[in-house]
Image (cartoon, rainbow, N blue to C red):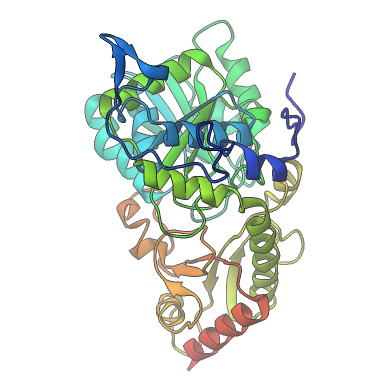
Length: 410
């Protein structure tokens, strides 16, 4: 039976967990803000007898342990495994597929994920197969049945996706994968929930095997650290990922773990503002005649209605803080010309890669974060602008975009 959306298993409310998970006072000093354990190695009580299990910070570190426990709690999972970046988390999970295995990948993913599967996984014998598994596509069941084989090891998708904000029905995807597998080896369902964060979406509660985040983004929330984390409740998957984490060694520093831990404590209130601002920005863009397309899962009516809005409303606590749009060509200006002008004309929206921080950012994915998919079936519209809507005053952000849009018409 598929768990109901938002089925939080922890006894405390999410907002309470965000403040306290992994942040219990230091046992030795009572410090309310736990100390950052920067040591690379730890004294042992005897040969082969590490004190409290700590021996070397690549294998395990008290500060990293706090972060892993905290994000696992926020996701309603049992095991958290932290990495030096979101790409390191992706690469490590991809190691669960070996030569001859296939990986089904959603057809709208971060450019670095495509680069990893095509440039690293494929040369070692893993075959990626891409499919539109979103609510606006041919249907999750039809899309998955067309690409699932007895060789499929992983089913990997982002929801909402990057940069088109496609929404996939997680519970339905899990059901199809499990029904198709029957008594055979079942592929693992991996959900990249970076655009949602656990404040808005809990993929494990919907049946996913692994949820992965770039903790650089909403979890950290302040554009001052780089990291990644995977969460699972499957002991065998966790054991393998921990082995790979240690063997490959792409682990975050204790200080980076501390920064993400600090960010988690304000995640719920930041997300509230991201939601409010993104909704206002999306409505503003949708009302302009010189905008050809707006992608936002919170738009349910009008010409920019999102095909996955109903699914998003069912499995998420809000449609998120990301908005993408394509300006319309106008006055001899191509859509691409206008997009470049807009991107270079804003005052508050900073032209930069990344997302999920308190500050508003914008970028042209085709030339920036998704340059690696150029010429592929996943190629991005060169006029698409992706917005990470921050927590500034909504009226200021709208005025900034309005000025840039008007300037691009000149």
